[in-house]
Amino acid sequence: QVQLVESGGGLVQAGGSLKLSCVASRRLTSNNGMGWFRQAPGKEREFVAGVSWNSGSKIYAESVKGRFTISRDNAKNTVYLQMDDLKLEDTAVYYCAAARGPFGSSSRDNYNYWGQGTQVIVSS
Image (tube, rainbow, N blue to C red; front, side, top):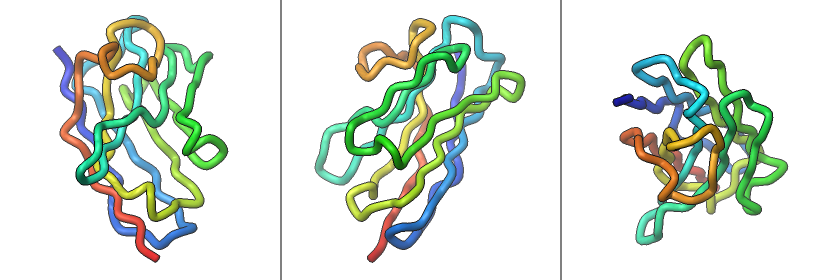
């Protein structure tokens, strides 16, 4: 079992930046790829970014490529999502998730632990 707690959400103007953090309750192992997902009102939860155990592999949704950066610090049991050049359509609740294996997959089915989410609101 692992609990995930996200933080860092808030209200930001379009073009601004936010950095989300996700702290795990126990040491992340080589079986724990990590990912970020988001869910906007009335929409399905969608993949944002994923990172492998050793940070050697990172993948991004097309909508955030070049603007968002996922990273992790295994010594701190923490995963980050740096979000730059935020757009109105980035408004959503952002969720951190721990994968069943060593890679940060884009499929929700590959994640078995989820945080409670942190709200990001981008205003014009």
